[in-house]
Length: 114
Image (cartoon, rainbow, N blue to C red; front, side, top):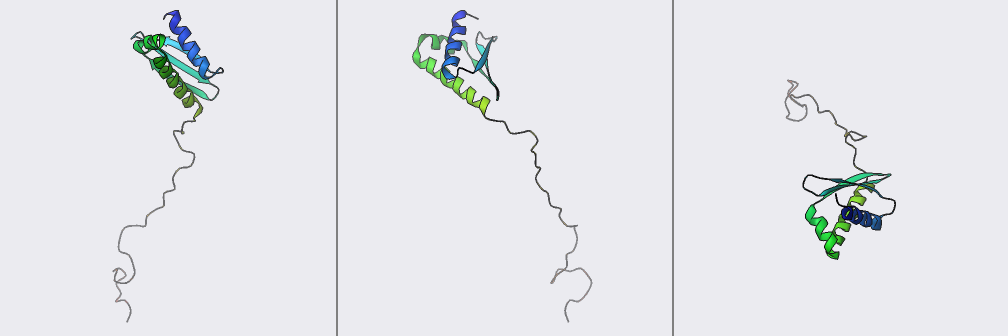
């Protein structure tokens, strides 16, 4: 990983949040996997080699990369829903199958009202 890539990611992350901890790991396609950490959680994003080169050359691509870092930072702050909810849905039992009583409902063997 080139030193200029490290400096680019460092400056972008620092411009978003100064308390944000980050780590950049090179991927197989010559890009970077950037992991962002805050006390609330962590998130990661993949940055391709083409995106890094474009961000080094132009301000628009650099701003796009900055927006991606900002979205990843927001993901660290939003809590995830728990896998198992604390309160399970209440399931009401259904009555036993069979004939029901009432008017013309059958059952009981009587003739009804006389």
